[in-house]
Length: 367
Image (tube, rainbow, N blue to C red; front, top):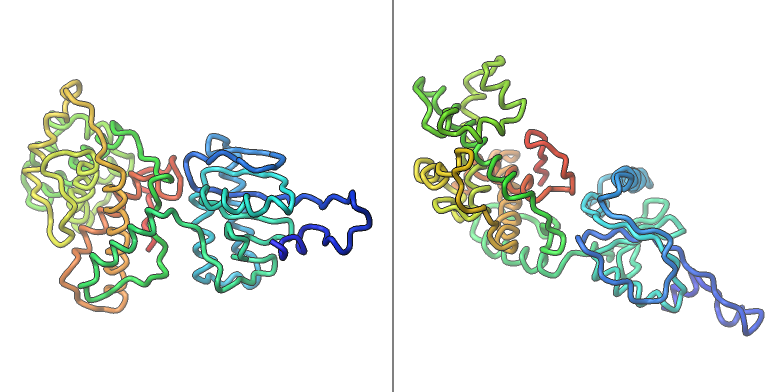
């Protein structure tokens, strides 16, 4: 605290009079949790907004630009982690705090999973360690905040993948925690899964020059057909697609499987990343809800912790697959096509980088 008082307050020895009051520190907090904890320390609130404010997205893009422009702009691991944090921000708070109350602010910022922007142009961790100063320098000991359940999950994931030939580095940040998770609506997820089934079945039928299985027929899967994206429709309508494109979309079965697993459908499973799912069995479990008005039970997501376990594992498995490809290393597991489709599906499901308006065809899967 004494360091912070020297930085932002007036030292007692320099005070001209007993009644001198130190100036407050203006702090902007960028938090990733859905619901902010109560601000239970003395402060003057200057502004507060969440993702319902359309201006916040533009503000965050500006902050990312600031982070990337400091110093030489080199993409270090710490700068990348700051960038990723800003992409996940859900709440922005601006407030004035007296130096004596900064300890309480730090505790609150940790609970909010927030990073801080200070008047000196620095971006700081909740404990005030410098993640990035105005000139682009960083404190090597500074660390980004992550939710406790996300940190524990990452440790379990690394243990699960311990026997694989390539091991992900510890520097890859964990997936989001439950307090940061905001899933798409169950009915939207079901429609997307049925659309993926339709696309994959059409791709499969093209490859074997036969009629598609029921999942790829409009009469048997009208909800899936209606939920196709414009890009999917153009491909299936023969917009110049070659054999490789049709072969590639057959793997959409795996993306559909991941979404149906999240919705708790029997026959859907993500435990095995090495082989394809049983398509016929999975379609039998979901075909009853492919007709308008046919569903008798509203789909419900399985526990959030299970979905995040799958997301964190898939993220690291995708890193392994890409590293193997880059280094031309043959690996027996996991299956690269299975993992890639699953990663797209889970990123879309969990609104990766808070971009709720991202279309299915635009979902990113950085590793």
